[in-house]
Length: 225
Image (cartoon, rainbow, N blue to C red; front, side, top):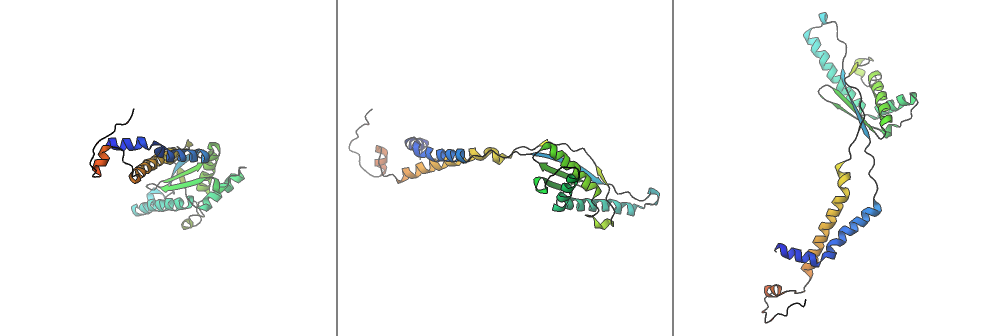
């Protein structure tokens, strides 16, 4: 079928083409809710700096095990930082400072990047998030002995590599394209509906259609202008 034929169909069935996207637009307008505020994020990097034995007494093999132990400690701290117990400990630390922040109100992510602990936290309020990160740093640095029983009750020594900087989160692409995608799907449905109705319509509209059906044309009355 030529493009002109499609254009003729859609021009003739324009109302069917427009009905689905109009319904989608009306439904979207009635049910529209502003997307939630993306919130803010803050991240801090740590490394483990367990004090070794004096250099004069430290053999190369012992030095190697010291570095290897630091890597294992980072793995353990990463697992602890994403647990519910860590969030509860951070919430309790904030409560001691006079700030009530439920553990469910903020998100924590942690990753071991080449023996470096990356701790990031998300929250809806920038000022509160800064306080949450300060409390998280305190908990991570001072209360990690319970999460690392392999150290025999000792506290792992962490070195903070950078200062926490609160940055706003960008909106997700899906939230920005939600309504345009709905309208596009509605328009596609309208085009499909117009083609379906045209296919089911037995009306003969021009000489070419009659000839394609095998009829012999004896004469043609032009359409009145």
